Figure 1 (cartoon, rainbow, N blue to C red):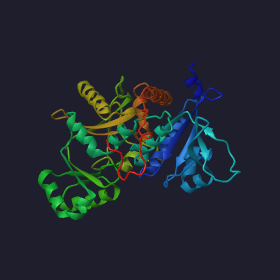
Figure 2: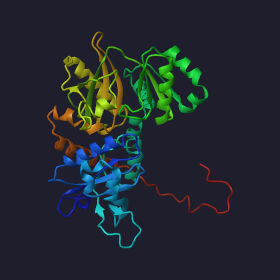
Figure 3: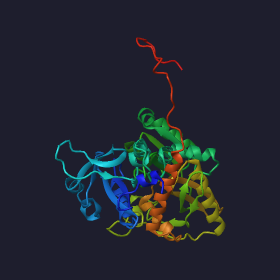
Figure 4: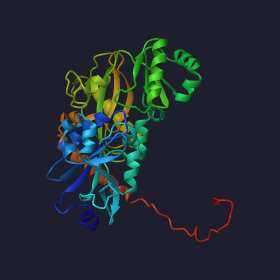
Length: 405
């Protein structure tokens, strides 16, 4: 075993996995479900899981109390029964350290080997948390800064799909300030260039939050106002009628071998799959995305499933993704036309149900994701991140101008 390998092992030869969930996002509660599902399915013979609940104000908390979904009925109870922690480097090791400034704050520092972000939306999925973790030189599960950012912004994502020649729905997008200053003109432009029904979405929101299907001018005007509450970029898509929603998951690291799951078909009670359909389904108790009404595998022709798998791999590579994603498509039977909707870099419940139907159990999938994270980290360590220069030695003081390139 190499010295580097020894460094990331604990005394009991189990790696400590800090599972982060919650966060500053409209999808906060959904993330709690996914995070606890990950903790529950960690292979206890290989890993020690540490729950890290990130409150809505961004503070980090950990405790055994934070492991049970029953304790999240009141989020303040989790905070009051947990210790606030921060990520810190201590003696060349990265630890979860008490955030208290008191001398006798109690509790031990928790050395962390791998971080497992289980966020949905917000800083946890858009590259923000990923950037923080990279500053500490730690392996982490899922897409990196770039892949996370691209996967979160539907406008930029579609622009990349267009460049990659992946088929998408016709769309327009606007800044929130455009809507505030030219509201009527923008609605007129949308009606002139797109046909009803139209879908209005915040560019960087997930779980169908803030999304509306509209059929007329007034509905469009109202939907634009709602979408602008959740993001400063709003995307408007022309409906792809008489189509079935087909999803697939991809696992791997961009630039390496990728695997795809079986396809699923998901069904909406209303005009489209909304938050209620995704996370509550027909019961009062949510099981995350597993609550959605679905058919696995989707009853589609083999050649269609293969085409969707190929398109999914292409999208994964184009967005520089890593770990696991779920990619959503629309398939219209009458003309065999397929369009790609979006990539979800941290899908609800990690789309475990797709992989279980593909022969990969949830605990095995989590172990695979941790392994992929460490492989990507090892590869990144090959990059040179410093450059020796005497520029500061030769810099003259008292100059009013800066350094000229």
